[in-house]
Image (cartoon, rainbow over all chains, first blue to last red; front, top):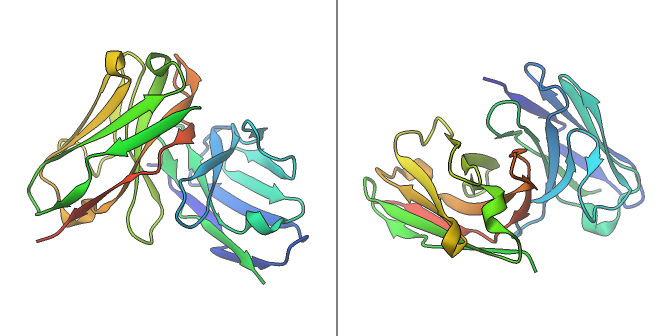
Amino acid sequence: EIVLTQSPATLSLSPGERATLSCRASQSVSSYLAWYQQKPGQAPRLLIYDASNRATGIPARFSGSGSGTDFTLTISSLEPEDFAVYYCQQRSNWPLFGPGTKVDIK
Amino acid sequence: EVQLVESGGGLLQPGRSLRLSCAASGFMFDDYAMHWVRQAPGKGLEWVSGISWNSGSIGYADSVKGRFTISRDNAKNSLYLQMNSLRAEDTALYYCAKDIQPMVPRYYMDVWGKGTTVTVSS
């Protein structure tokens, strides 16, 4: 079974800073990886799919990269509304989510 | 407006059964695979089950296999999750979610409901 690991668990940054979130798979998932954002009390929102494709309506400051086992979500300049928990998800077999990275305000 | 509305959650004892429903609107429901995803209190996301547009392909997480059954009624634009032999560890907020692509499932979820809460406790 593929296991996803996300790092760091918590990322403390200030608005305007660049955020770099990592997701690592225990075996190759090709480019079959997505990123979701979840704010407290809200449902998750799809940001990126197939490693680097932005979902509809997602701002350009969100970008994804990687393939195989190592993936990165980059937020180029944090807006106040970007402080949230971010999950990666693979779909090589059935969907599986990573444990999440919390981006909080420094 | 594309919308998913879950219902059917509640408080019940271990070993009991419950059926969740998800009403879809604003898109061609019968073109899309659908999923159930849950989130235990204070925890991360766990995919529970998915079903293709025509019910021809169904999958379950190992944690629910043999206890939960997913189904859909395309005529009613509705998705269901029959949950049997419930355990305390099934306590969670259950989300209904739509697959990103029509016909051929991509197993990415681009529309989510607000969820319905299931609490299993004696």
